Image (cartoon, rainbow, N blue to C red; front, side, top):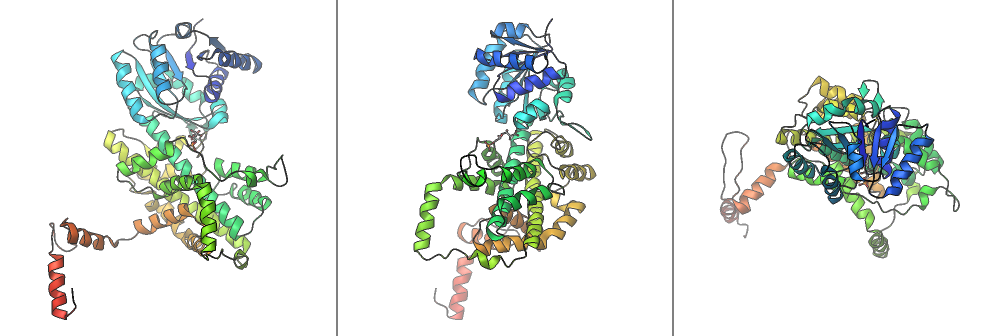
Length: 490
Ligand code: 6PG
């Protein structure tokens, strides 16, 4: 009997996704270059109740064991390994067969591979998969893009293996070309923003508020029962409760403060710059990771500035702040900052969609992020509804419901950011979000002065508020005449 689908690449994600597919009743063939992984996966399938999963040691046997038109998911490291795997498998594939890359791939690589595959009569999907190991095994969020036919061929599988939420499975055909990978990339950028904002909330509560890990665990658990309910808040509450098995106290305090990264956050910020879309909260989260990496430099800087006389704030003076109120303020600051961060991610998607003609449905994307993925959160349902109310929404902040929420929270938000600045606790994500909000909501900005300066030194011209056209002024000449007239020396 032939398998319904194949999967190549049996590291953590591949293994779990294969077991998920088999568990939903779809016979699956699996393959890995290192055969030990094949044996391991087959053994797991056997131990998990005899799932219909079949291991293959040669790429040819693997491909030929799948029913036509074939669909093969590959889950290997992004970049060259994907090309190598495609090369190996495509020797045995036939026209009409499809390759589905489930890695965190750069969208342009997917677009190149779509063209190459199509030259051989093959179909291709670049599919974002989010949710880590647990998501892959029990229900990820899936973001497939590329060939619609390739999607149709496995739609019934994808809708079964994806996370299920109240309004359906967390999968949709995202769009053509590299749309699926691009959407997953922005998901990760938003993930960076969320994690940064949460870490800032932690910092303010811990340093300014003096909360213990136990109190932090309780606070985050409490937040997870309200509007902030989300996977990242939930795991954060858990983290504060984990004790260090090698010593006293909690493990979180023993972890080196240097954040690693694999690159999707950086791509998001690069794309924002390419598209002229402001994404300051996401950029701040990336910068914070870079600065965190300079551990030795930061330690030296702390010493130098201390010697230079910087007085570390006396946090005891801030402890007069009512703890309960501070916790509530930080909750509101976090929520408002998060809305701004999502607004940036959504605008990035909107802009890329227009450039590429992907016709991305932002409401539907918010829906498939409601379950399974790392940024899953209660408030994604509200984002979905905001885009359903108005598909062309300029910015989440001006959706009438979100606008009201932002206004309700701004006093608390300003208190938290003000307190953090006063205490010398950096909150780059919250500050970036607040500045984004304050810039976006102002009808008039000081950009007039920048325009005047540009025209002064570079004759770049400017527009006027009161008449059409572009203008240039001989600024220095007039200024010199003026100075001469007033007797000021130039
Ligand atoms: C997911 C995650 C996943 C991965 C991140 C980590 O959606 O399941 O985003 O793809 O854990 O890419 O990214 P960094 O290593 O860059 O933090």
